[in-house]
Amino acid sequence: MYKVIKAKTEDLLTMADGLNYINLADNGCFILCDETVATGIAINGTVYHIAGTEKLTDDAEDVYIIPIDVGEWAMTTKKAINDIDELNVDQEYRLTLMELGITDYNELTA
Image (cartoon, rainbow, N blue to C red; front, side, top):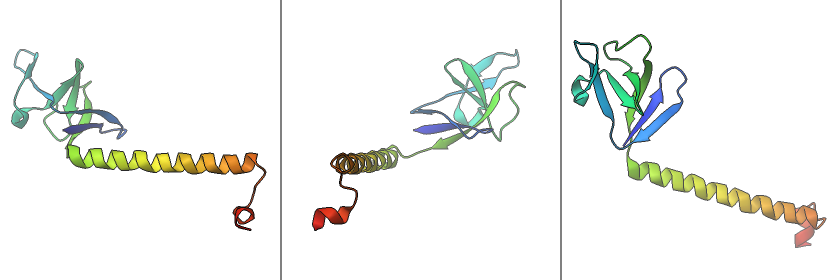
């Protein structure tokens, strides 16, 4: 799996299992090619230049392609979701205490 990140803003453009690697043919058309000779990628019909390769066109935005481990990414995402769930439960607990007029945790243990 790959993350495609815009070089200028470092925003995530997409994540994909496979990419459409392209190159500029002699006749000016973009053609699909092997990753080893590609100077760009096509995502939903838009051409992006792979940063660090030969210039593709003047208007193609530069991107970085970063291979990622899907398993590691999935586990990191799952952990983040669990952390958020714990924070939401804690927030609901604190709101309930406030609604009951309990403003200090020590009041519960006394």
